[in-house]
Image (cartoon, rainbow over all chains, first blue to last red; front, side):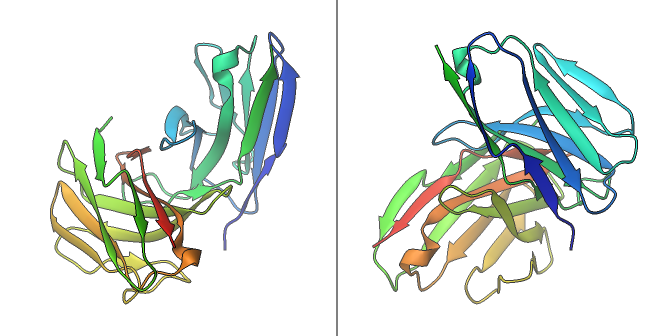
Length: 113
Length: 111
């Protein structure tokens, strides 16, 4: 079945630094999604990507849909304490609301003040 | 986006009992999805619930253990049956409208 490899598994960085994480897939996805999950909460959608090569920003966050459709990355610029949490990539082979979404294993971000 | 409410937000249950989790959406949606997130793990899809038909279960999940109801386009329930400590997880419902939006989850502890 489809699998997503997300890296790194965890990051411990200095406040103000830029962050980069990525996901690779064993097969082609037509939708890539990036989520953040805070303790005790459900995942919150950060960025959705629907087209190969697409580069989308949401404030200090930027994500790209890889040209091969088998990878995506998320960058966070000038990290701040509230960026702490677990970030998940997710992908789907379909475009419709009925398409299943598969999640990566997550990247745990910690920030030194 | 959609606003999704789950009840209960958390529960502690005795082994061998069952718990029904409710998911309410503020708009009509075709598909609702139920996920499990075991401690420190990622999200795993349990089943897809389409209104008016039987839910479709993923490999490793069966209807007898996780029966699902979908009585209308804004509501679904997931029951965790005959619970054991291994069922201790966060259970989340989501709706997909091009992207997936999640409720806050139900944190279940089985003792």
